[in-house]
Image (cartoon, rainbow, N blue to C red; front, side, top):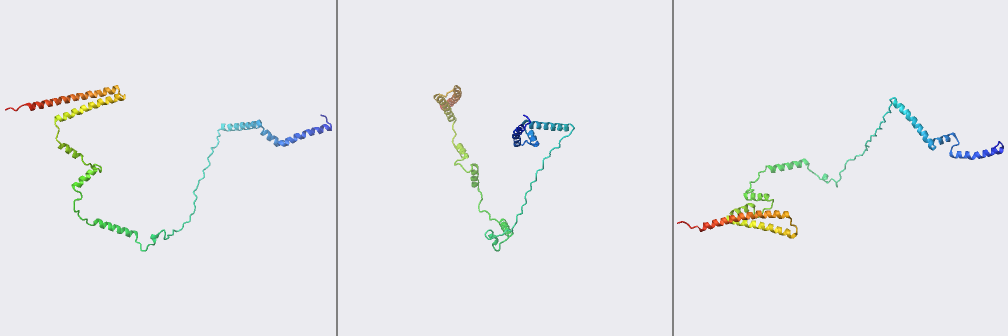
Length: 249
């Protein structure tokens, strides 16, 4: 490019669009250039790191001299006060519908009424009572009330005392009768256990330990039955010998 007017005009023409572009982005002045340098991607990061390193070095230097930052005190909490509201008070007015008792003429005072009640109570307390014409609770009534308390209000038709009295009044069984009843009872127990084993066998639930246990009980009752039978035989033999002996002359 030479210094001819034509070349100068071409250079000025080519620089005008560039200046317009700088104006478009705000970099046509020193402030715009500084802002671009500050906020330009890595440039801003590098500047921030530089400031951080500088401040950190200053802070560490102050700490090395024994300086410590002042503690930050929490701000005081605001004290909430309960608002006081002035409420107007008006005298209570009584009307006839809500306080009819206030409009009854010649009412007596409460002290007068209480005094009359106390006087009546004292008169009734000190008045002589007529003697009872009969016993308040005789022996029969006492027994009835005692039975009600004993049986909780349901007295049975026959009391345990009456049953005991009937048992004492009944004729006593002889020794032979008692042995015969015991014999029948033991026979029934043996038969009951044999039926139990038969039922288990029919249901398919018979176990060996059950058989051993029930058979042991049966053997024990058979031994008891033999002892009772021996006593019966002795009693029968003694009774026969006593009846067969003739009196001596």
